[in-house]
Amino acid sequence: IGIYANEENIDRLLERQKAFLEFIHQMSELLAMKLKEKSETMELEATVKKLKNNGFDFSFDYIVGSSSKIREVKAQAEKSAGNANILIQGESGTGKEIFARAIHTASGKSNGPFIAINCAALPENLIESELFGYEEGAFTGALKGGKLGKFELANGGTLFLDEIGEFPIHLQAKLLRALQERKVQRLGGNKEIDV
Image (cartoon, rainbow, N blue to C red; front, side, top):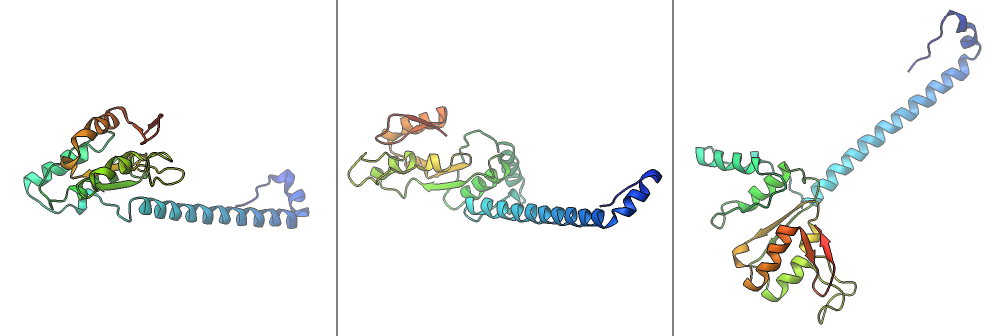
């Protein structure tokens, strides 16, 4: 930071030198404070992003393997990292969730949450309320104020439905509607919520 004066204004500058130096000092402190604030904001944003993604920030580099098949699958997954619904198939333990997290990180939704739910681990009578949420009084034992479902919690991010093959037949139409229309309706509710 500096002060410039042409020959005509040098005398005026020298007369008010102390005031100008104080001005420069104040401006430099203000700039330093703003830079520190920006740095702290960036650190906080990185922490929030990491917490939203359950502490994981996977990229395709985390997926180990050098065979032509694994390179082909990684390239296909990387290319599909967008707004599409993606079906990842594979035997148990082959790293489907790692692929899902890498796709999430590579997508435009990486600042949003990554929510994973194992459909096979939930009792059939809880799956609907867990995925779609519920309104207060929807059933006996419903929480006061209702509860957000996983679709709403993942809004702006990624919802990973593990073991989707175990999803009950009678709820598949509701799941299909949610995936196609990108709208959900809470259990006991009557309005559609965009997700």
